[in-house]
Length: 260
Image (cartoon, rainbow, N blue to C red; front, top):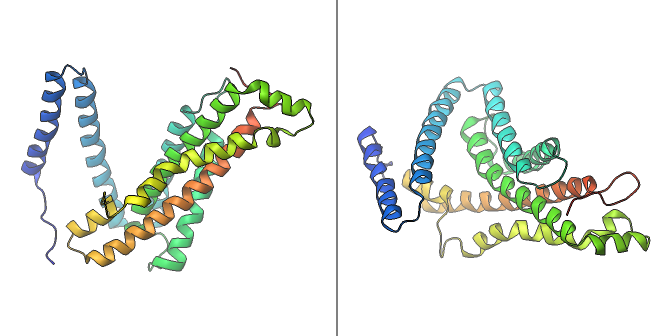
């Protein structure tokens, strides 16, 4: 198989025509999304080009410090976005989310790099950065879904929770069903993707490797690994986030303090 056809600046300019068509269609149908589409186009273009240059420089350096720095930036941004999506009268979920994402991603990456991929160096940017980007983005969504779902469920069922507490249940026992439901909901998108992968959709890792001219079977193997890594990371993230979130809903006297 041949190598991938490289896209130059002219090709990139032509690709903007795709979004121009989307803007025209939005205007034609009076959707009112023209501004958002233009903003999203500009941000995508700028962010990806900057990331491309930064990662290229990191590849050239091939040193653990810049690799860890960019991973730290990615983790911090993901934690901030996620914590902002969890509704609660008291903010401050950032440390919880940051630590949850760190543990879940670190666990999964360590397993994959040490036992499966086995690169020459553990900090190899060729593997560590793209793998982290893929599983971290999915873990961020799972954290947001599970945290928001748990807070909403507890808020909408305060009387039931307080009844359990009055009957002698611990806070964890009182919200067990809501926590399980929140974790399940956060995993639905990943489960749906795994059910139809290859038949309905061709994920980014597989498509990218095929476009780069790699063996489709090897590309499929990597995609299988990525899907399994995403699922494990999402489960661990949701467990840790919901554990921390429910604790913030009760005070030291085991009283419910969430706002309705």
